Length: 186
Image (cartoon, rainbow, N blue to C red; front, side, top):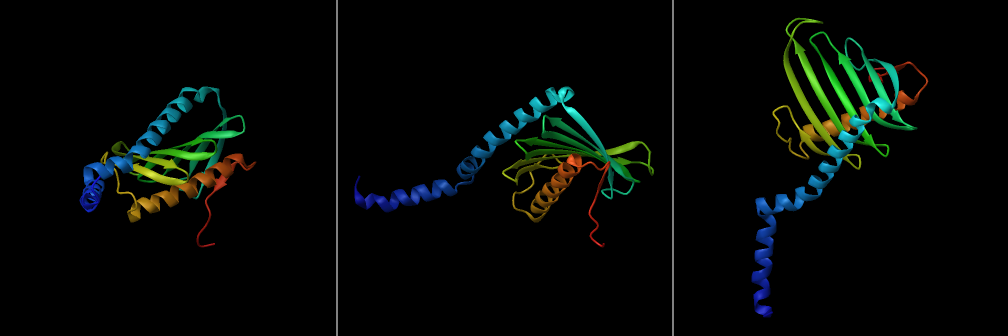
């Protein structure tokens, strides 16, 4: 290779690596593989859900009208947690999935009622959150579009779901029949 061509080659490499089409492939390729693995684990957990030991708990302080939680154990390991949150204007349903003790996926579905407490469901919103190494790596929001990684709302959801997950896992393992939300004003 002619040394005079080296600057030109470096410029071309730099331009190609910053091209949106190419750089997004470099960035998303590892996540695509992780997302596929998470989806496979999700399917495997749900396929065997009837075989797992179930533990039920009440939730207090997580929503206005209370809630409940069901944890699914594969031996000593929690593989799935289902939380129902009830409110005056609707309810929320969350599923947390785990692999080797780590949160890998959260599915949330919100239902809005047309009148307080038990009206007809008039709106449904779904969100999907993919986690890897205690980090949110993809959030597919209510419009079926990805929310920007690193945005303030993305980072807030990461923090909130990791915190809720820890509380739910700890509460599911405790002997208490109720999992209490921590009071910020207490």
